[in-house]
Length: 79
Image 1 (tube, helix red, strand yellow):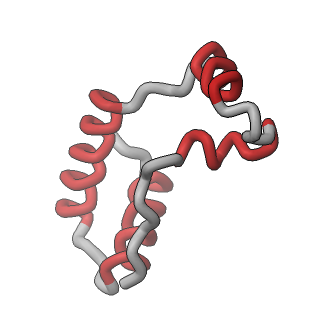
Image 2: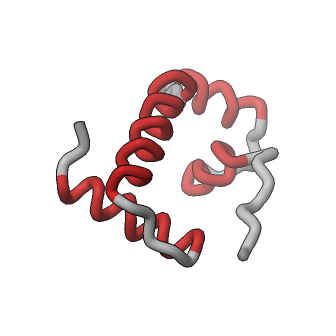
């Protein structure tokens, strides 16, 4: 179950992205589906993986870790 605060935050993000505010019912269903999907597919980057990546890419600065993590990911399209 989502907290009221989490539901309100989700609805605000939805409104910013799609230009309309979803009903509580739609927001709960959509947020629950999103959380279920994220739980199934999200894997944090292990420190060993980052170390291996940086060894393979010696010119990559340690402060550029975000770049390393997002390499190959297309930029978000503006609406």
